[in-house]
Image (tube, rainbow, N blue to C red; front, side, top):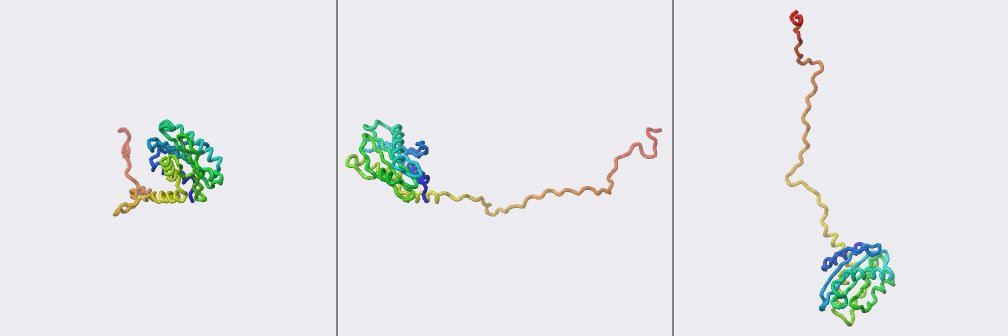
Length: 222
């Protein structure tokens, strides 16, 4: 079964694969992967901020709060002048074991028009295998919204697709290597210690040192 943390790993990998600058940021109690992109669309600079966090359950209140904090982070890293030469797009997603109905409704609702910006909320339910987000289009800025939709659906895939990616990545990891002896090599027995000669026989008398004066002679010539 896919866990929220594994899904975050998929988001981070897809941020890097699509050319984003991956880092982490602390939002509330969570450490979140965040991707920053700057792309040129219709003579404007599109600043994307893709950010995600794992929570036990996703509620509408938590989703709104997380999106607001993510928007502040995105505005602080904007490239260009917002509204004139640049647009700021925030794609904020919460991933949990369960998504409340109010959070699913909030994420799927059509976004309101913003001056020089766009905010998309994503709620991912790994247990039910559902991703809730607004992926529709708008009458104005069709090219921009097409680019936003492509970025959102790529960085926040359906949980089943993310699970397949996790399994594929695990299958690519090589098994642990076991060191084997080269062909023709035979292990030699350990070298025996040199033999130690036995101690001399206790009753055997060895050479005796000379005794002075010789027996039978007085000492010193007397």
